[in-house]
Length: 189
Image (cartoon, rainbow, N blue to C red; front, side, top):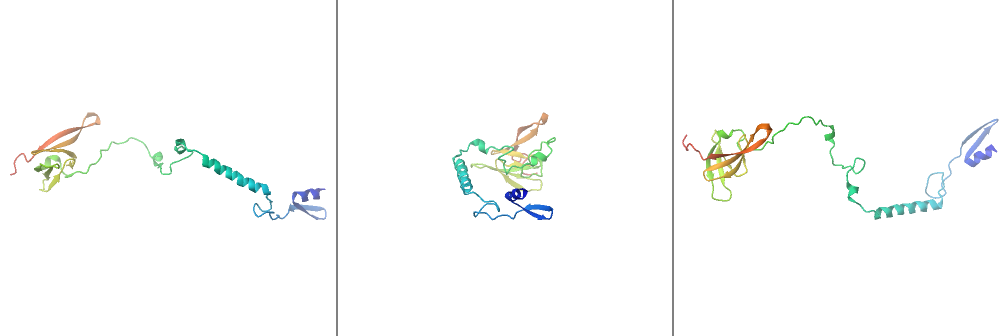
């Protein structure tokens, strides 16, 4: 009886005298072309799997996408281009650093420069400044001048008006206007 039960389960029994050992029977080839080795696939399960796949595809085709489907959340829809380095940096005390503006004659103070010429009469007036070494440079409205990064706001027939940023009490900055006349002491120095 025990031998019959083991054969029904798929085990073979080998007996040597009064000792018997049960071992697994060799796998049987599949009855149909696919499936797992040793397991016969019933003909209806392959059709059922194909039908289930068709139902899933139909549901996906009918799905209406909403804006919420594209919102980034922590558990889904993570932005692959987002940088996470900010998480690992220290957010200690920040120092207020003024933006460095490239300026003409950036090595010289405003007092060291001399306005030597102004060209007006068209839509784009120009002014020429000279440094202590005698090198001249032409500027237009919007250009920055000297170490103080004074911005040229107006070019008039006899002067150039500059806008300077001055540090006020409390760390705030305020804008000041300064007019520089064309060589006020005369051309001969």
